[in-house]
Length: 141
Image (cartoon, rainbow, N blue to C red; front, side):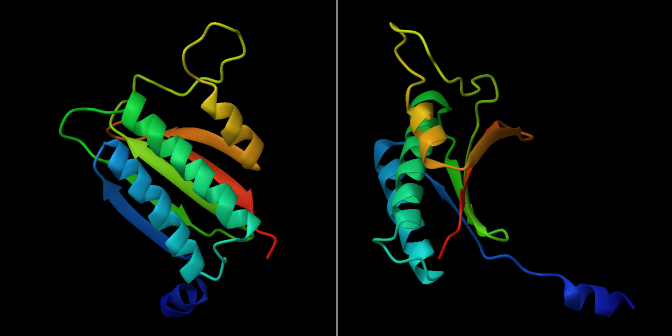
């Protein structure tokens, strides 16, 4: 009975990698996300790939700029739950949650407007150390 339950579980495509909390690490994260999606059948020039690349670029840049803790990497996870592509970036700073800015004169927070525009839904989740910011794109291939 237990083996039948295990056989019926669906294994979702998943890819995870840690990157140095540097601008170079953020660029590499974006490039790797596009390569992973290509391996999963999402062409480089497809809208989903382009949106995912921009989302990863923004989330990774935020992790490097606002979530950096000396000596700690950030993590990129790309998954494909039913009907979607989900990217999640985790960093070690739990005290700096993302905030969407609406007023003028703010120095940061505007990149999250890009996340809102490019994704179908996004949010944050706590971790034992730090936080995860994730975004999902509905898959229309």
